[in-house]
Amino acid sequence: MSHGHHSDSGSHGSLKQYSIGFILSIILTVIPFGMVMTGGFSRSLLLSVVGITGIVQVLVQLIFFLHMNSSEEQRWNVIAFIYTILTIAILLIGSVWVMNYLHYNMMI
Image 1: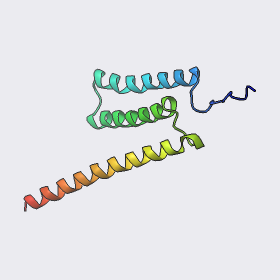
Image 2 (image 1 turned 90 degrees about the horizontal axis):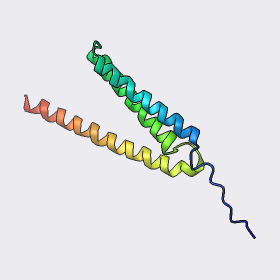
Image 3 (image 1 turned 180 degrees about the vertical axis):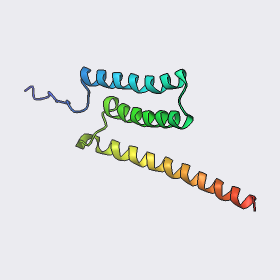
Image 4 (image 1 turned 135 degrees about the vertical axis):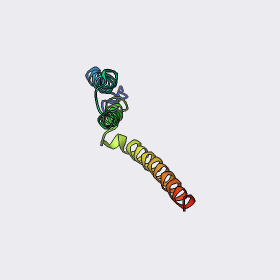
C-alpha cells in the first residue's frame, strides 16, 4: 500500500511567493536608503519612512518567508510570536517608564 504520500502544501511557499517576498524586501530597503542618501528630506519624515518601511519589512519576512498566517498549522507559531512581541514591549515600555520616573525624582 502506498498511502504514505503526505501533502504538505500549506507549509512551504512556491517560487512565486518567494519571488514576491524578495522583490518587496528589496523595494522596502531601497526606499529609505535612497531617501537618506539623496538628502533633502526632513528628519521627522526620514524617521517616519524608515520606521514604517521597517515594520512592513518585518511583516513581509513573516508572511512570505516564515509563512506565518492564520492557518491551523501556524496557530502556535503566531501565538509564540505575539507573546514574544508583548514581552519585549512590556520590557521596553517598563524600562523607559522607570528611567523617566528616576530622572524626574533625581531632578527634584
